[in-house]
Image 1 (tube, rainbow, N blue to C red):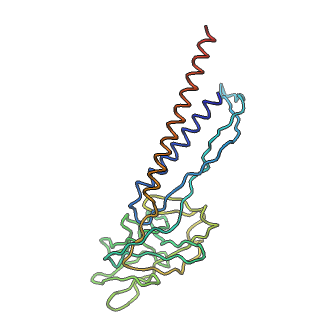
Image 2 (tube, rainbow, N blue to C red):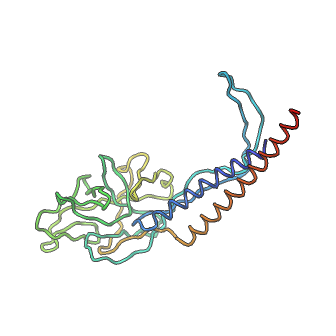
Amino acid sequence: MEGIYIGAMGMLSSQNHIDTHANNIANANSNGFKFDTMMSKVFEEKSAYRNEGGARTFIGDYSNKVVDEGIITNLRPGQTKLTNSPLDITVSDKPDGNVSFFVVSRDNKQYLTRNGEFELDEERKLRTMSGAYILDSNNQTIIVPKGVNPMIDKEGNVRNNETGDLLGKIQMREISRNNRPNLNKEEGSMFSYMGGINQLPISQSEVQSNTLELSNVDMSKEMVDLMNSQKSFQANQKAFLSYDKVLDKEANQLIR
């Protein structure tokens, strides 16, 4: 039976790797997206049980051989491209290893994002292209009055481009290496934070307008890794089916 377990666990692990690489590839053109890596380990001993009639019966010990430990998100900055919009901004991280994020709100929940592609909605509120509203230092949305052409300076202040009047300051928070495990990836290149975003230190990093941070996905590497994961799945599938045939043959011979 151990061969069946080895093949099945290998198939599950390979499929998880396939899904991870496929998701990275699908989001390669999403601004501010950070790629994921599925981490695996081997030779974890487990005990197998059978649940029957409310009773849990011990079957035996087995080794999973391959076990997925979870997904790690790489926060390395993506490449920067120039744009023609003064509402497009990127944030520059400091050398201390901390990573800065813009604070946004959607459906009354706060999130972090590196996607600095902003626009004004019908009410002239500053938001991301996916509909999350940019929050200021007081956790309020930033509104640009009608007829005002906005610009964003290096401190993240949204100003009237003609008069220099302050319209709001974009709230930014930073994540240290120790806090990274508390980040949870959400849709739209956003992250939630366990413990509350307001508990994170305020970022003093500078921003640059007329620029956008692209995803940090390496397409060529992801394609190679995806194909390798598919080959691994097929190999484990063949092993699983081979063991299944052997066990089926042994069972039929024993019955005779």
